[in-house]
Amino acid sequence: MEARNFRNTLGNFATGVTVITTTRGDELIGMTANAFSSLSVDPPLILVCIDKKAYSMKAFENNHPFVVNLLQEKQHDISKIFAKRDIDRFSYASYSISEAGVPVLDENLATIECTVHDILEGGDHYIVTGLVHHVSYNENTNPLLFFRGKLGPMPQEDAVKVN
Image (cartoon, rainbow, N blue to C red; front, side, top):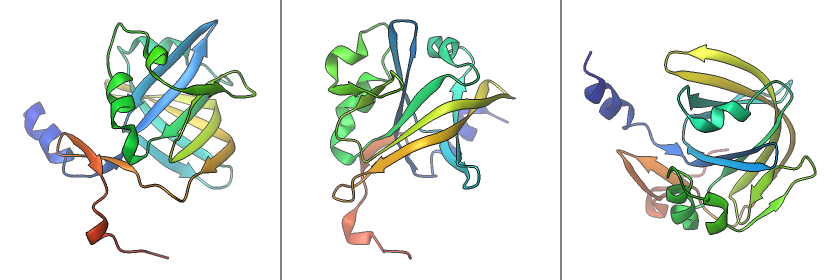
């Protein structure tokens, strides 16, 4: 199967955009990721997929804290900054430090504070599962979405509330 055709096909599935943040010693680590999902309610688990070649992967080990920052529509620039390499990403972002010592971006759609529960092999990525310890969200904003290679807000005229 041709890799580009496979990627283009998967790009037809709209996803939310996240920035995963953690630390490695005194170093603040952050990266944009859209391969994120809920995994379990009991116990509360999420998962995120990280490229095996990603520098930030070195920070992830069992019981290490990390945060999933679900981005809102006005954080388009933040998603691009945290997707870049070889820059001090946090110098361009407003954030605070959680009780676990991990950076939490300001003005998120939602924030999920976790510790690494497990790390699994998944082709050219690692599947990092996180045990969730704390969550918060903002009901007054909309998500930043990734669809067909582009970032944008959810179209409100087509939005339908599902209970």
